[in-house]
Amino acid sequence: MKIGIDARMYGPKQGGLGRYIEQLILHLEKLHTNVEFVIFLRRDNWNEYQPSRPNFRKVLADIPWYGLTEQIRLPVIIKKEKVDLMHFPHWNVPFFYSKPFVVTIHDLLLLHYPTRRASTLGPLLYWFKNCAFRIILNHAVKKAKHIFTVSEFSKQDIVRTLGVAEKKIAVTYPTPFENKKYKVENINYHNDTIPDTNYLLHDTFGITKPYVLYVGVAYPHKNLDGLLKAWKLFEEKYGTGYQLVLAGKKNYFYNRLTNNLTMKQFNNVIVTGFVPDADLPALYQGASLYIMPSFYEGFALPALEAMAAGVPVASSNRTCLPEILQNSALYFDPADAEGMANAIFTGLTDTSARQKLLAAAPAVLSLYQGEKLAQKTWEVYRNSV
Image 1 (cartoon, rainbow, N blue to C red):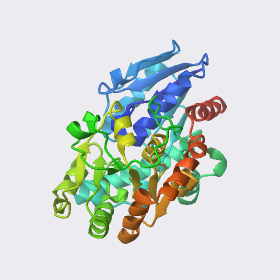
Image 2 (cartoon, one colour):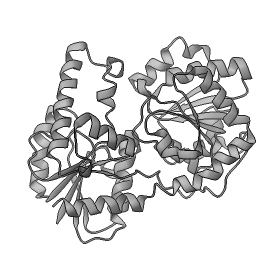
Image 3 (cartoon, rainbow, N blue to C red):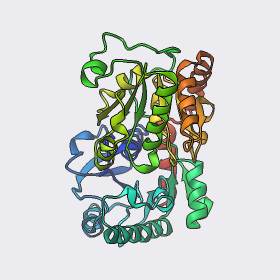
């Protein structure tokens, strides 16, 4: 059997989706199967993945996602490899791909939040793009041998919204990225200072105070506008002794946020830009609190990575977040700026609450292991050919 994986979004630069593909492939390698795996990569991420097993092989598919080129040229490249089963880890399955495939639908964000605020396109182009998305998505879930998703919330959302049978969907939880510096046992219950020796935090990011951290993109559903409103209330009520650090790849949405008049009122907000994996552990471990202000999520990888670094988490109570974070987060309504500000204060200063959150972390993190992700995915592969 030969299995192909579309890994054109492989790697941390593509956020949670890239992390999911990365960790899935790395842990599939550890299963030591005799099946041949063909990993399709772009030129941009070609060097980010180096096979560690002889039955894993890279193939160049230097095609951008979401366009006509993907629809026309990608099936040709895949066909040359004669795979028995193809795994598309996102909804963008080429419409005319007719061989057996499985697909991962992480969430239905674009159906529930079809807002032009999340697009740089004009009205007409945006309308065409949205129509194309709906056609491709419905085709993918209808023709797929099986569907993976990343939470029970997303599974039920797919069942209700797209009319897919539950038996066709498998929940395979992603896993936080592995780093030997991440040790849940070494929990710091009261991180209210910045170590003088941490040149990375000081010199690279300009962090000079204890800080609250957010890692991720700046799309509207992430609610960073709401977080800034809450931060303003926090500083007015509790003082300016902390910094808010927003870490994510700069693009149109981060630029719009930083150019916003509201943003310019703050002296204690830092936007770092993209942070490579080599620097993420220090950024997580130095934080006093991690904040997850989203209106909508399919999963919660950054919050789990912060938790694994020994950092308490304050989170929105929407969509999948209570399912994923369980009793290891302090919850708030993301539409309530004052409630978010109060949750930040509690998460920073209430020692008892911090201890309870961090004590719950190991059991929660144990649910999201790469071995479980790979094994369940492999079982679906075997049953889909």
